Image 1 (cartoon, rainbow, N blue to C red):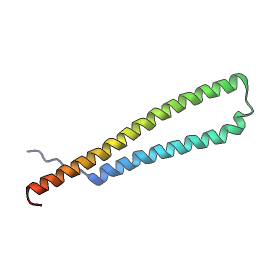
Image 2: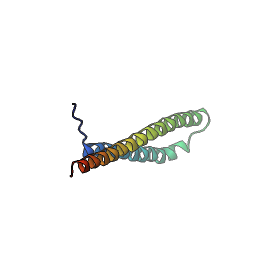
Image 3: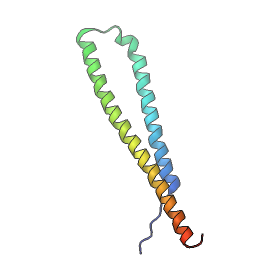
Image 4: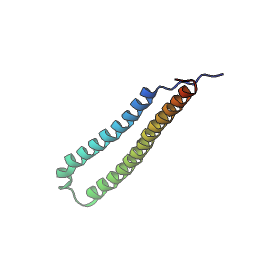
Length: 96
């Protein structure tokens, strides 16, 4: 019979890393928007339009990544919780 091992702390640490990555990415993008705002105020015409097109593209990509990382974080936490509950139920079967 194959032994299955779970590292609950590792699963939760990975989930924390995903959440941290989302927060860091959001903070960096917000900082970029704030930092470029004064320069952007001086642009007009095609340059301004091109910037907003690119901004829309990177915001869309960032939102996709944010959603993916959030789903991974949730799945890691759910997996850790379910396996901890299963392990506790198995211990109870053996009087532990």
